[in-house]
Length: 312
Image (cartoon, rainbow, N blue to C red; front, side, top):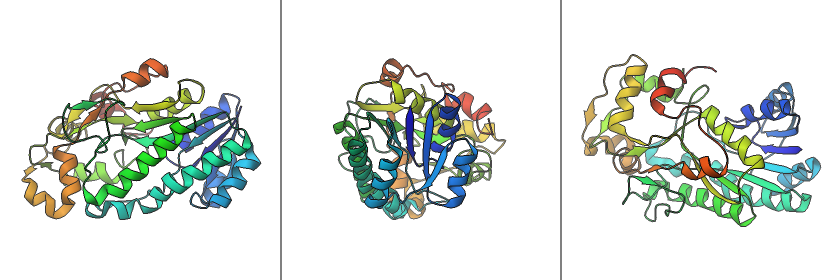
């Protein structure tokens, strides 16, 4: 098959390219720079430059590739971000999830593409009330913290557009593993190692994790399996901050995290950060396992934190 990966030099895309090439597919991957395109070419794909916020650039690139399958992995994330100014940090990515998604889907339709897979997210986006673990049938948060309102709307837009076009939206949990912020040498892991990530307030916020290799495997599965719809791509064990953060600290040889009152933390990470740490809800992967034929290699973050943070 001819497979087009929008964001072929990114966290998931860069790992997808060599796997799909090895499976015999003709892969075109997009990048924002010559260096990124060169990395795609080195992995066996065809690297092309595309502006993920420019509909004209997107249309021309997709039509030239004439893909059988289009995989949307576009983001513009790099380095740290400010929890108090969350939407500002995600501004370009939000354009890629709205304008970019619409342009990709329109171009795919024009090119006769038969299958579309779009990257989504699950975690703080769940409603912060009710059951501790949510399914795809549960609503997203109807009352998001103002600092993240635009970002949630952009994620929801990409999901709706994908499903309306007969495609699949993969809601990835919080990434960890090689090359990630929560991976060896990554910013978040180093902060944990240095004791800079405390348990905030109750620490009752439930997180769902996804090792980067499991995100890639789920995307490969979605290229050929599953009906149109939304799928949570997370491990088997959603867990509150009070469980996973001390375990992570222990796994990397750090001291047990301190606990700070929510009102103190709010000064540094704002209402959004406090909500994520205290009232977030996790996600179930039952649908993805049943309908995509996918099972996470790292069934629990417990194993993943011990063995999956370094290069694989």
